[in-house]
Amino acid sequence: MKRRDFLKATGATLLGSASSVAQARPNLEPAPEAVGMLFDSTLCVGCKACVSKCKEVNGMPPVIEGDAVQYDSARDLSGDTLNVIKLYQNGQANQKDQEVDGFCFEKRSCMHCVDPGCVSVCPVTALRRHPKTGIISYHVDACIGCRNCTMGCPYNVPQFEYDNPFGQIRKCEMCNQAGVERIDQGQMTGCAEACPTGATLFGTRNELLIEAKRRLTLKPGDIYNYPCGDVNHPDSWHEQEVAAYQPHIWGEKEAGGTNVLHLSAVPFDKLGMPPLPERSYASISEGVQHTLYSYLALPAAALVGLSYVVHRNTRDSEGDSDE
Ligand code: SF4
Ligand code: SF4
Ligand code: SF4
Image (cartoon, rainbow, N blue to C red; front, side):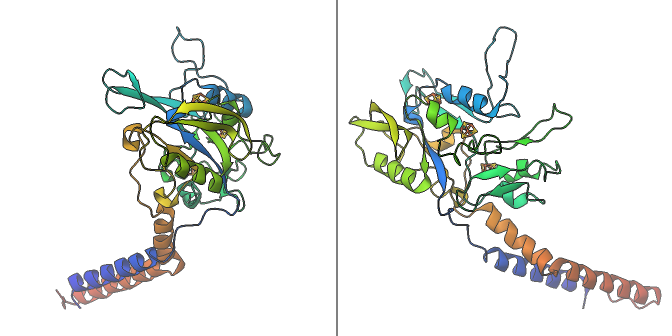
């Protein structure tokens, strides 16, 4: 066999087996009692009560940017900020929930993916999906600080504490980490509890999905009583005119879906949401990894290749080239 033919055959075998197994692992299904949140951008007034409450619940300091400002002015997620409200604005920015000459607010925090990339790429299971609630938790005792999770997340959520010599990964754990455990104690998340308009709503993924689908059937301009707090046991209601929603529930299907769902009147790509296929990255990458390592295809191919090179060099040195 000529070297070119050998390389072609080896490459084709590897690619063939990798792609066939990459199809083998389907997306994970939502956890049986998955809890999450519905963020409805059309209800958000940008008050940032959810940001303050998040810091209070998680014991995090304000981020002061510049000398003139003496209040929390965090603009993005960081080791000290697990939840942030961002502003979209265009042109005159005088119309709420309009793409052109409009503005709106978008919440950024962990989406609690159904088939999470961060969990998939962590080599030591420092990130885990709860089998019942689907909450993605972080376990500092297991973490080796490799920061793979920061690259495995399509939403750029996990943040490493670079300014801390004992730095760890920080991300929203749905207010249910050790010492907080709001969900285990039957409470809702801090951000949902603090939100005055119901823009951040807590509940099970199933109930939130039903509520989100109901909103997409409403007629723009009609009045709707939006529940606040917990979708199943609202602590109050917020009456508001229905906006012209984008006909899309973000997180229903993106990359296997998320337990935190978003609704908006402004297209999601304008709000910085990444374009994602329905197939989760975890299902693809784990399929390839298992092909290459679990079935020892790569080491076997490497051994065959090395044997060939040794054999060829031996023959070359005897003056019998096969090229
Ligand atoms: S949003 Fe990122 S950090 Fe959160 S569960 Fe998904 S992959 Fe993990
Ligand atoms: S669920 Fe808790 S940790 Fe997550 S964004 Fe809301 S308040 Fe912050
Ligand atoms: S508390 Fe509610 S309305 Fe205020 S910024 Fe947060 S999500 Fe928006």
